[in-house]
Length: 140
Image 1 (spheres, one colour):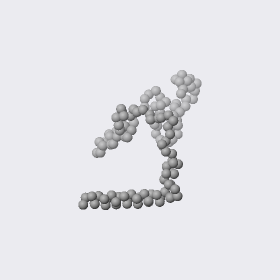
Image 2 (spheres, one colour; image 1 turned 120 degrees about the vertical axis):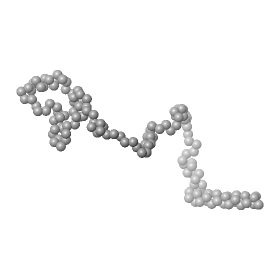
Image 3 (tube, one colour; image 1 turned 135 degrees about the vertical axis):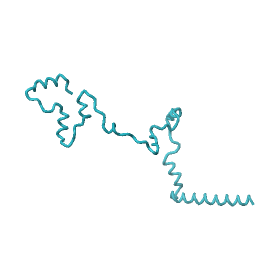
Image 4 (tube, helix red, strand yellow; image 1 turned 90 degrees about the horizontal axis):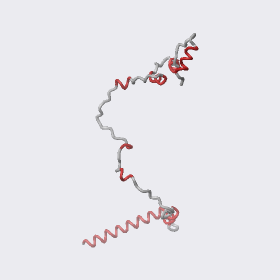
């Protein structure tokens, strides 16, 4: 930004022919013939404060019929005491069972996985039927 001294020097140096516009921002805005000068942008280059927005002066916020739900970030989901916890990091931690071991357990020989699922479901259904039969015998 130019200082006040440099602005005065340029005004005095060019006193023979003064430019029609002293502000470069105002010059750029005037090139746009359809736009009006934006006083808020012009206030950036001047020492005076920007004027208040006309919409904000005239707008009156309406009372809402339904209450607005609070943002998720601002709601306390749990007590602050519960947030402080020690890390559960253990040295030389190894999982109890690896993926390949779990997959081998599911295979169980030459049977396919879906065959095992159906066999287990049939077995659970048979056990349920025998349990219900024994319960009926016991209640008689």
